[in-house]
Image (cartoon, rainbow, N blue to C red; front, side, top):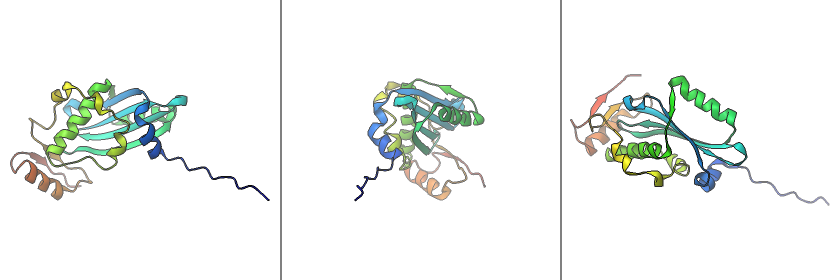
Length: 185
């Protein structure tokens, strides 16, 4: 009679990130260079895993209105895969390395502003928070410029629900208290 060999559980990146995300040191924090002048920016935090592997959270930030528009998390990237990801970011524009405190201040200032406007991060952000570290936020968060002259400025993208967003802005900040630029895709 043959012995049954137990099945190995399939590896789950999400479970691994939830369990280990903050236990590894921050390797790098990158932001699209020139982000101060742009409402949309890409931000990437990288944590060093054992065995020269990397865990990442890649965020698309809308500092002018919606906050976190998109988030992607992954783990077990090797150096080549990480370099390819950074190279993809640089195809849009240069990236700048920033310190972890500034990085977290930027992320959470963006989220706070968006929540004041009635917008919340996508549900995937709960996984990203396992890689981010809100304990790194300091008084510098108050120096992060969000909005345009302190007001929301909504510029729609091709996947935005314009009617829903404008309704939320009307409800949360009031008509006339925000700017819009509507593009037709």
